[in-house]
Length: 121
Image 1 (cartoon, helix red, strand yellow):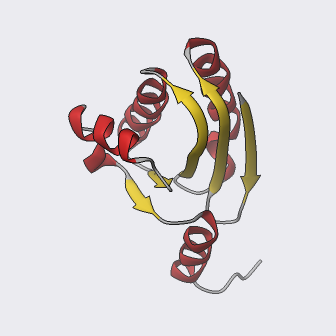
Image 2: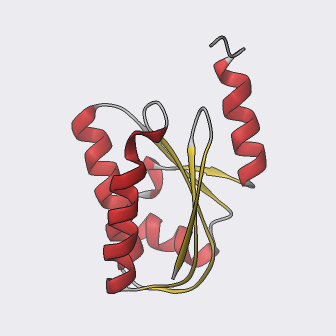
């Protein structure tokens, strides 16, 4: 599994490709810990469309992030381009209501930047 992370002012984008199984979950979770404070909130944007295989580990990764955000009373999880299968799994596990869905990373980043207003360093 490969993980590509891009830091933006208003969010952190994590793109995963390949297979997300138990060993991938460990790597993905460790990576998530590393980038947790990269954006305010944090706002985490997950693009998982290039995963060719995933098991319950994907739910584990998202669940850990959701629980941490709940404990900190802050943060957002945005999924872009989720597959119908992933949507179905999220629905069945009652996690769908805890994430936001978007069509593309680019639109999501632009939307977050507009919502934040002008940048004044």
